Length: 118
Image (tube, rainbow, N blue to C red; front, side, top):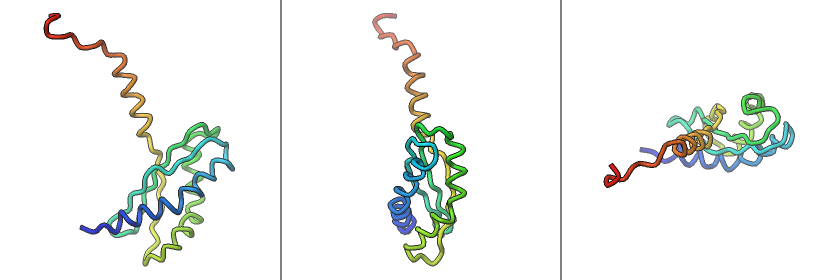
């Protein structure tokens, strides 16, 4: 097993976090955060997960903007001097939304009855 995809993913995240965050200031405000990067074992594809908060355009439009700017982001990744510059694919990170939904569901449940109450 090679740790190289994980190292490349960390470097891509380091390089692209600020430029992706800056995109929010130019396009509807709010906060765009690069939350995770997963690189394929052959280093040809990088999946970038972003969270979007408080942006006037909405998450889907931000993903579209990121995809439009992918060539610029790939040029930044090229500075890593890899044999192959990975194709960048952007995805909306919905982890926080799912956690919030689970919390809401748990709050709606009545507390479990103790064994001596039955």
